Image (cartoon, rainbow, N blue to C red; front, side, top):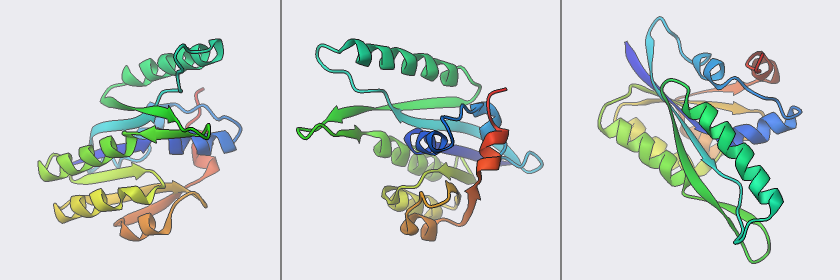
Amino acid sequence: MEKTAIFIDLGYLMSITKQLGNLKLDFDKFSKAFIDISKEDLFRVYVYYCSPFQGDPPTDEEKFRKSNSDRFMRKIKNLPRFEIRLGRLTKTKKGDYIQKRVDTYFSIDLVKLAIKKDIHNAILIAGDSDFVPPILEAKENGVIVKLKYYRDTVQNELLECCDEKSEITAEFLNSCRIS
């Protein structure tokens, strides 16, 4: 059996589900849908995310968003073989928000598992070309990299560097909704 790890950029996935009317996914069902159980064994699902911004002191709205986020993260963390890597959200002087550490955690995990030969396949749910260097390194170490993406939300450089790619459709996402 080939070991497969799934890497989910949760910010990317949430932006897609938001486009579809704030669709709530069953993450266990969603992840298992990508595995061919006849030849693959799920090693682990890695979820990368930033909790909502917290000022000092946080506003009531910030506290509310953080509480909801924490509850959501606990649900995911309790799923079998799921790991969460939390970055942090920082606020710029212009008032924009920027993720920190998420892409780095994603990259470290992918490269580490490839070098240690812990996985044969990596399934990525992402759209950012920042992942190209770790993908190339994983491929150099024998990992087959499969990209799952939603239409018009992925950078060409990322598409070009993956071994296999397939579009996630709205119908597929709807089939993975929480019942």
